[in-house]
Image 1 (cartoon, helix red, strand yellow):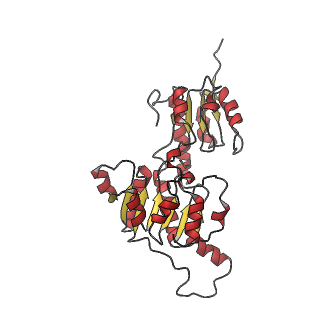
Image 2: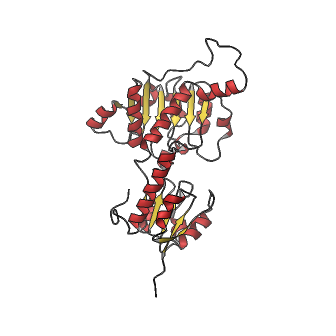
Length: 323
Ligand code: DGY
């Protein structure tokens, strides 16, 4: 009797033509619409799966895989994988992969765009113009801060942080960074970046950008105390994870004018946004789209499919440790 085909669960609608590569090897259980699956629904889907293609919308821990004896691999479509409890997956013998590299440059572009938008008040200016406030050109309309020649502070100096630093060179910025580990001299030279302590980074940066991975230990790393140490009139940009920032403390700092402006692509309770943030004019808000260029989102799905195929024994990378 022919052996039953193995089964893969795809938790969200992704690019059909790319996901179709799985059909040659597996029964693929697709999800028709973007869905916030309940923990029970995730557990039920994984219970009969050998592999899964998931996104940051899908929180997967010990409980979700407890009844999934066949599950061998989870491919996360994203570089961040804080939605997955890695220790629990290791205990259960499940390989987890992510999609680094393919989104680095696109995400760095967006971080830079947000920083520029915050410093030069682009969101505020557009809202002002659309609201019909522009009567005549005047010298002091919507004055902002400069980015060129200013000091950029990068918190988290992995691939994306380094890509942000390389962009800063074109703006003749001085680049400071803080990271768990100091970079090798050659990489520091390439990025023209100077390693400093956390407090120094806060105190000396005109524009601070967060590009570090999230972990429960890093929750509210940028809290009221950290914000109070920032240079008065600085800006803060977050393209990492919302939980890194205490949003109420940020709202206080922006409302008091201690920070000139901020830009957030990520939120602690996303897709819900703290109403205090929504009410602030000096804040640029975007819906977690830093990696959302058409080409990059396709590359992320393609890499996740490759990772899943390799982890389940197909393709040139079969058997190699996943990314
Ligand atoms: C990631 O990859 O972690 C982003 O947040 C989603 O693209």
